[in-house]
Image (tube, rainbow, N blue to C red; front, side, top):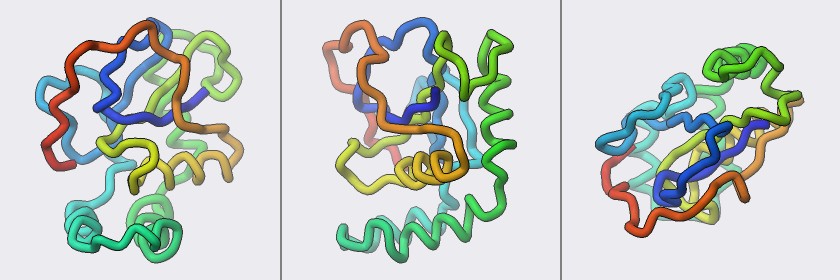
Length: 149
């Protein structure tokens, strides 16, 4: 299964959960995998950050991200790339043993491109939703996620 979450969650994921950053620049000290093909281009990020409107969530911003990133990708190829990060040979979309969690900076209720990725994967037959219950225990301190994507 494929999930999404954010770096600030700072949890200890179970051993069968592979963490993958899908932002342009992961936090300092990040040692997990990165999949930059899903990262928004810098210019688009700067445009989004300059626009304080939150009501345009699935309007213009979604189309901008789709045109800049998702329209150039094939969901099957993305899932195959993610599959290569897993230790098993069972297909990711069928696996009950291994999971991928796609990470970025924003909290679940905040605007983030990972929500577009989740919707796009789901629309293309690969279930993807915000993570819940994939971890053992929270880490006490908050993550330093002040860096830009």
